[in-house]
Image 1 (tube, one colour):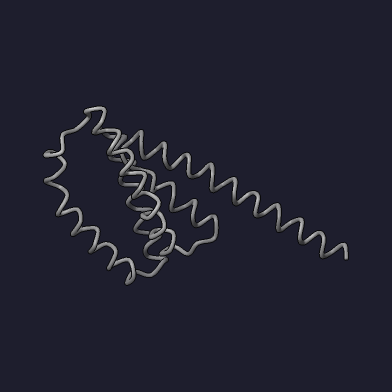
Image 2 (image 1 turned 135 degrees about the vertical axis):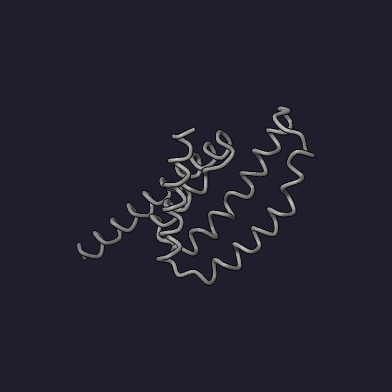
Length: 132
């Protein structure tokens, strides 16, 4: 009886920690996305992996999370007059094509390779930002 109660308590504690990670992670992802204009996905993917998602699912879920955050940030940037729509429009169609290609490739890349590609991109982005 004690063993069952102990397992239930541990399960509740784990669920509580996961909920806390989800809330804190969501806030941090949103702040990064709004503050830097990007970067939320770089935090979301490892967080989603920590919460138990497979690599491919973490990447796909990250995109689903970032979409409304990016839309909200873009609306705020537009309202604050940080950019003009014509300046962004030239990237829209090529960006949509690239996003579709990336989504199709995601299904074909093994999780282990995806993790390595993601890590290399994070390192490259970090070095690039430090060097500028």
